[in-house]
Image (cartoon, rainbow, N blue to C red; front, top):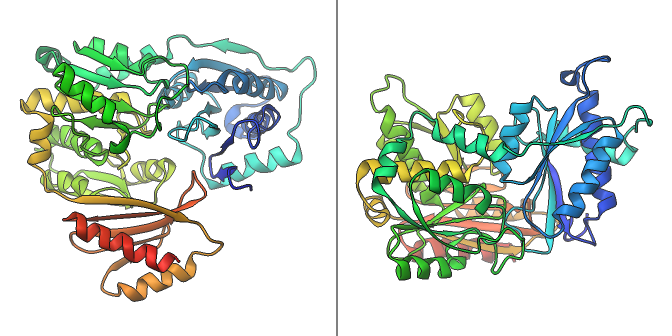
Length: 462
């Protein structure tokens, strides 16, 4: 693995033209197709050919890689259902809708413009687990078995996948579409020239919102760093203030993460996306006899804990990664879950991070409560999250040992790196799955306390 070719459980990402080439994409797409064909869930001889749903974000390398992926899939006798430029959650939902054997998404998510990636989705709409991902990689290394002239797959398009996705969001019983339309929200929108506008604009129109937008062209030429974190949302904040919008919304290039800017133009942080979504769902279930379960990852803010406890819910933490959270949601029977990076997951819709879903839930909360974003934030307990990066050495075990000794009074969780927690603060250090770095994340009631935790991690990382 090079410094920039990152191989994970459910796919790989790298720099276009060096790590990631059409040949590599075609080979791994063929391997995914061969895995589908070898899986008993795909049917037996004489049954219709299995299919794989293909979608991508707007990156300039997307059309090239989509053609390579289609060829690879067809070469092993698998049909391709091509969605074109769509949000990642649209692909996940389409896999289930079509009864496909898998999904393949060409997106590097929040990574910079020079990156692209392959993400493999299983027939349940969840990213592949470790065992399935290992089998796909093995097939790619072995050389997937190709079919002859009379067994090649075909390509068909699904032009209504986004409409079907939005229909399902708006049909959710916990979303009061009428109340949202009555508020006539003015929304400022930043899609960073990713795939967002193809879904977000029709969604907001159907919810009766007036939109002031920037970076809506889905051409993949990101005008700024594409991750929707506060330091990248200054232009959106200015748009909110200049246009007098009720709130600002920003998504990443593949539209599974959502960030919110309040009516003053302040980016409030992605953890509030999930906290507000949790409130929107749990407020509708206050009279449930059974305590609902909320699942988040180990790096999610305590503001979500507070939103869950406010409604009497039980909060369960899982290792970082959408697939880990998704399986925990399924196994725990959770009502809602997600990740603190702005990823909302609602099993009543599908078990995947979904920014359009997050928009609908947050607008529902604002519409039914009659308050503003800033007022919602002001009514929540305040914490400060500090995020930092460091170089990843060959072995992190000694670092974790030093941290355990330094903070012997903390509760330690080593399922994903090392998370040390106290009643009102925590420190999480883990290797990134998307970049060749170590991530250091701390949260505490004050900035100085969070900075102190990160500084201790940095000191011991040297």
